[in-house]
Length: 161
Image 1 (cartoon, helix red, strand yellow):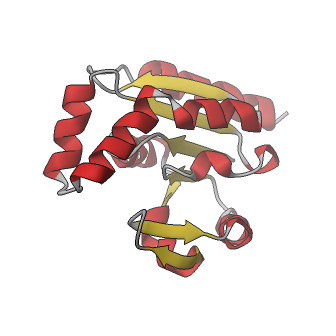
Image 2 (tube, one colour):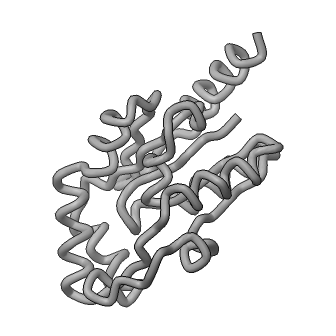
């Protein structure tokens, strides 16, 4: 089974992934460690790597021998046949998100770009366009883990039948 956790930078993807990794005893794949290997080049203008989706998919196939949690702002771009559940994290408190990005030393331009992506709910819209089964979690306030774990349990039960 593969669960992806997506959302704009700073919404808490890695935090949730680590919690689920511990609770479920699943493997976690943080794509940020692989961006350079998966990229076609570093895009200086955008200040990020341009990811080769074929390499990305191959990495997931290679790593998917076990139950897997993938956290990345591009994880939702995987084909639906590879993903059992897509958890989209949002942060409706833009001031809080802005502070998180500034604390990470993002440039003013990059902060603006990511706030715009959050305002327009880019990750959520793309997840739905891809056809993923989506759970939305707003991280601007303390969220409850139990409904997320219940949804994972339901999907696990369905997939095992």
